[in-house]
Length: 195
Picture 1 (cartoon, helix red, strand yellow):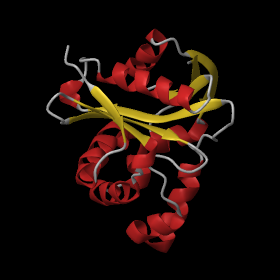
Picture 2 (cartoon, rainbow, N blue to C red; picture 1 turned 60 degrees about the vertical axis):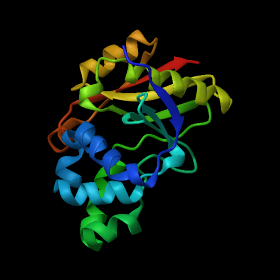
Picture 3 (cartoon, one colour; picture 1 turned 90 degrees about the vertical axis):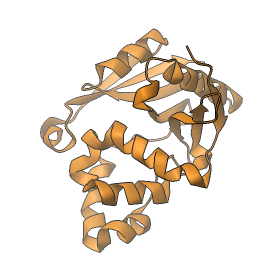
């Protein structure tokens, strides 16, 4: 098992790499809305916010994974209509924002919201996800939260198994109904863990 160093934020030089890893992790879910991939990657790279990221690196400093979180002040990927219009145009951004709003989970005062975790494929199984989760618990505690909250989709049983091993428990299930054909999954489970 490799030692991983987790720190807050990322450098401008890492933006494209993080956008690519984000798209690899969530492109199946977002592809029909955010595609085509080159346009989605440009948008994601444009709106990435290092203030809402914890990044795992190996001993050589190479990026291994990222966890994003959401606060009242923003999120890892949180462009609004103006930013989206730069990449998709006025009409394209309007319908995209409408559909993406259906996936949004509100920030609340009681729990720290983990808003996406992704690990470089070659680094999976090496403890990177666990290191990122540990750093998230520490970040949540430092900000005064007693619990971390996340949503996991039914099409990602591997992630759910990790969260359960980490002590997350299911609170609620949100079914997409007909929108499952748009997003590529049937439901998302809200899970929480005490820190």
